Image 1 (cartoon, rainbow, N blue to C red):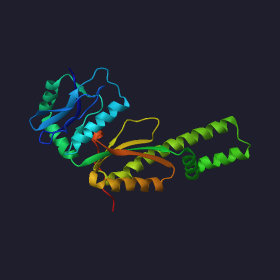
Image 2: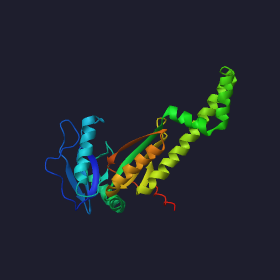
Image 3: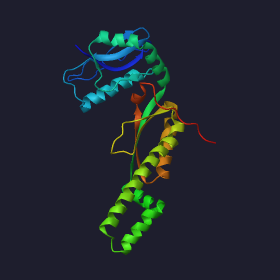
Image 4: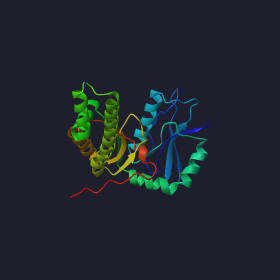
Amino acid sequence: MSTYVYGITSSSQPTLPDGTEGVGEPPLPVRVIKEGDLAAVVSDAPEGLRPKRRDLLAHQNVLAEAGAAGPVLPMRFGSVSPDDAAVTSVLAERADHFKERLEALAGKVEYNVKATHDEEAVLHRVMSENPEVRALTEANRSAGGGSYDDKLRLGEMVVAAVKHREVEDAAQIQQLLEPVAAAVSAGPESTGWLANLSFLVDRDEAETFIATVEEVRKGHPHLDLRVHGPLPPYSFVEPGPSQPAEASN
């Protein structure tokens, strides 16, 4: 039977509460397998597993239970290994890496911040910031709408200005939130978002982080910011996230 892996912890952490249930229908019992100083929180892997709401919540609940007593490296939903022996083999082979990550993530959580533009507000901002766009808009209006070519040119200028604004806003969001985070990781690009950033935050600094997001939101009314968290630090299991920039004087 294949082994479903929820996360990796230190073998010295307390065991999970009796009766902890994981993914599957019916829910499969969760167990801990150990290898040296490390342990993996696992269950049997159900056949035909799909990301249904019940199973997604079960995965998160197991990680919450495992992380209650100390740091845990969360595996993403659907992480399956051939068997328990394969899991312990990986724990042994990558022991130094996992220990370093557990130490780095101790006492930290992840917040994901996604941003989009308020269409009306950003168009108003583009008009106010770009004299050429504003002038052509006025010229077209005075000419009863302008020629086809003038309308096309104006549309292209507006699109270019909004794209430029998206790049600048994404960079500014990261710059403003980095100082209150331990690290930041950029998520996959999507046409639906101008920014998709995950921040590693000390649990003790979570309120400060949320307050800073609110300050950014209030100071940039043309932005729609959506925050998800606290989450297990999925984006920081592997090394590589950038470190926060030094705050300027």
